[in-house]
Length: 238
Image (cartoon, rainbow, N blue to C red; front, side):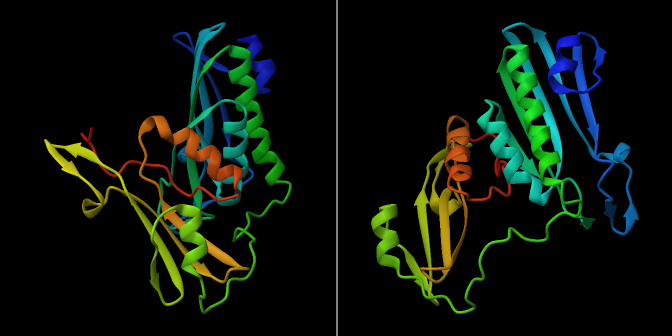
């Protein structure tokens, strides 16, 4: 317990052999549908540790403002944690709050240090008290003029063009209830490009196996592409 306190910088709570550290988001003034919320009402970051030595497991849920998501995900992935979900819990929340689920196995020291660094990333962003209202990227032209050919050469697929925008769709396969499903049933990865060659925006959706998620997240974060959600669309697929 003492080791985890020293490494995370937080006072732990111990119950049934599980050690929990919590960080209420007291510095953020959060409202939901106009009602001021207390951290007790679900706005507290936490991580729990079970096991000891090199057989320790951590799981956690980090409560984040939108501008904290990319730096915290980068810190978590860069320090050996897995990011297993990213989603919202509320509607009409101001500022918009996202919840990032993390997990990992290894030594107590490595996991506690990784959690500490993820939480440090929050504090670094919050040197500016008010959450940002945008990613802060360049202005995107109102009229798009994206040329599909260079993108087709890079992505190795044929793009669909519309009004100066270009979209790429890559089919994946899965099975559900004994039926094979593909792109026509929504099992696909896609990316849509708009703007100009010099000032473009991309949005998309990656269909992944569990074993692919962490590698894809690292690639996106490494390319300075913001990850805005991680979730499943189906159940009982194989």
